[in-house]
Image 1 (cartoon, rainbow, N blue to C red):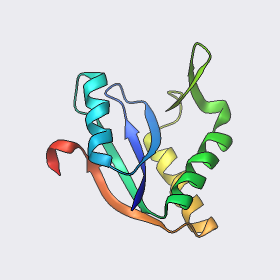
Image 2: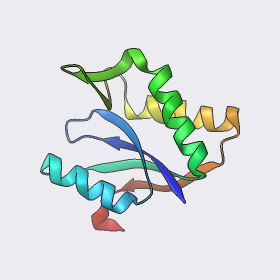
Image 3: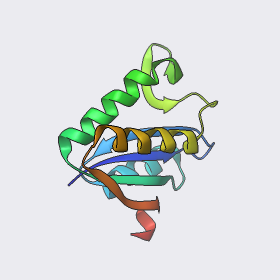
Image 4: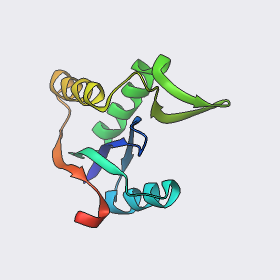
Length: 112
């Protein structure tokens, strides 16, 4: 199973990414931020659908991607909330019939 996850930084910034192993990915976020970082929603399903959805987010949110120097991150500007991002992702999954479904909420590696 492949995953597309939504992430919320300790400071409240919304982000997203894809991974095969969400536990390891979540540990990496914690090690880089110095705190436990939550994945408010994890979607699981087909690899090709998770990758296509990530690509669509990057394209449709191009004006809202947080850029550090010239580096485009997978974080959004502070004006976009995690709830707005989730609503958008849920709508895309439904509209485009992506084979992805919510497999976890409010996840961090210390609780599963």
